[in-house]
Length: 306
Image (cartoon, rainbow, N blue to C red; front, side, top):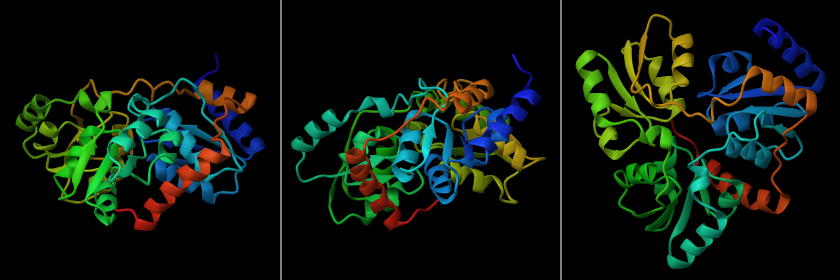
């Protein structure tokens, strides 16, 4: 076993040799964020990677994120350091299930959350992120929306639009563990703190929040001068970045249970092994990639808002 400084040095040397970039999602371990070229949300990371001249992308996140990178960067090699790093929510719907649901609602326009497989994106009309979901739905010239796979993000959108929302019963297990009593208890302990939660949270949690924001939105909100204490209602990995970028401010995780075990599967050792072996590689088949890219491109044409 290497010590961390040795591991870091070996990774950086190999990264240069492979002409690679390392992407880390906001929920990754602090040591992974520290070694990354880019830290952010899944779409931002893939877009940044597409702009680089790197031949190899090491995606420190979960499987659908590596697929998104493959969709946007078809000529680059996409490595996911742990092939078991999946997303339970993304796995709650398949392309076959979505096709069946579309037949039940032939007049509905399918909007899929970016937290979905490439095959599901390929079966959808347009993609969205948690930051731009409301804007994407509002931009569509239709009154009936089939939204997959996150019922809680879908419910949040339904409170912001008059369109009929048909929701798939998927959810994020990590955000579902955040309960209203967590918010009530922490508000009592930190009366000056702003409560900021992710739209993947339950409706009764969202109802108690001061702000409902994506991870990129939380990062921006934390920089505001009027925010000195913040109760953070999302996966705990983001706390590391918030503290690093905002020294002197206080960030309180809403629940010690808000940990995504799949996000924590990736380690420095696995990044090194991945670069050494050039595997596991994630590559979306061209037929699916082109259809999935069309749904992402439609979203990007609408524009993003944080």
